[in-house]
Length: 229
Image 1 (cartoon, rainbow, N blue to C red):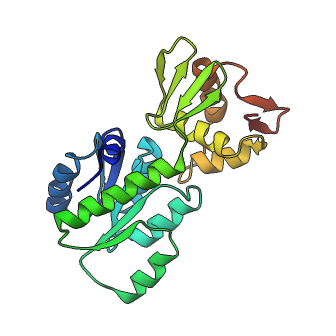
Image 2: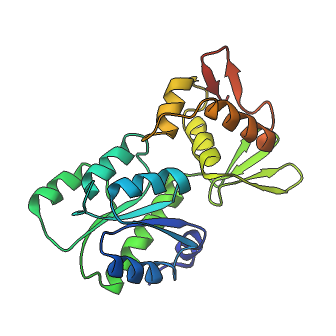
């Protein structure tokens, strides 16, 4: 039985589901949609990375054995820039080598297929607990505050401003390193993992984010980079 508080957290959260078998992916997505607000799909690790960068989900559930990029390689790439996102691995095989490697990747759980309902509820509860543990409810910022659970900016008039996935990723990266200068190169490498950043992409992203949270929230440090005090 899941607590009401965990149900509320999940109801506002999104999941990236990576599974190469289409029938299983579609079926699992229907089940997950009963718990979360959105489920994004990918059929392999490479497609999963693109979906992660586009949607910036709250939770990741991924298969292990997939074409192009397997689940462990995918997770290792994610963990280079995001140590906190809850990740669940699913597999039809109790592979000892995979199990040993997965221990180092800070997983919520390694689930064997077929997944039982009670096991899924337990794992989703653990994900909700991790989400609750990772973030404060609000962070005072610029001309208002950042709502960490809903990932929106609330101004001093109590109006909410939706942020794009890249704006969220940039803002949370700066907040995670609050008070520290992040170089333009470091930010670009963090935000654009697979592809080189388009010309002026970061500058335009900073400009749009400042319009939503206030001009003074993000400080430029010469031509080096940016920070939030």
